[in-house]
Length: 115
Length: 113
Image 1 (cartoon, chains in turn blue, orange):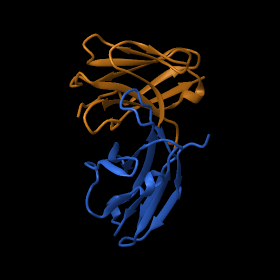
Image 2 (cartoon, rainbow over the protein chains, first blue to last red; image 1 turned 90 degrees about the vertical axis):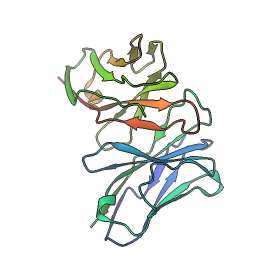
Image 3 (cartoon, rainbow over the protein chains, first blue to last red; image 1 turned 45 degrees about the vertical axis):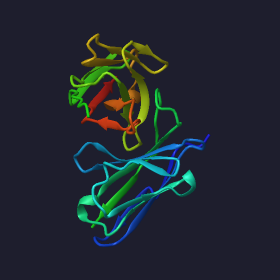
């Protein structure tokens, strides 16, 4: 069974450009989460999808970040325009649609560097 | 959200038990304690979780104090491959924000020969 896959694994972009990160969750997992770690900081929650709906987007830092999950399958996280402070590692995780006792499976992450 | 505090680093000899503590003194009644680890540059990996009772699986044991304000992750026979950053997290199990993990700084566990 394939795990959570993220693409690209690394991205280097210039300030002001746009970058789109993609996450493919484990098949059948309705919960999809985005997290990120910026340099020297803790891993922080960004948002949570249940199928195609945004369940909780309280962690999204500002309106330069847009997450979508069309059809409830894969998800994209777009940063537009990117700023230097957006550099970090972006993780995606998925879990089954049960509220309790869920373990989340994380992808390898996308390392974003804004120069 | 409940906060967690962990020692920044710990050492353990290979083959010995590694006991990693975590304080979560503000945990609420319906928050689970989860442990994840991150090996090198990989994504976090689930280890174990619990609510009130002690738990054991093939990877580790989780001991939660009776007042639930702290817990200990036990790796019974640490190997070199267990060298990683270990995160203690609490997860809200109710409302609309379920599954939202709160990570702290974690503990860097170094297992040496």
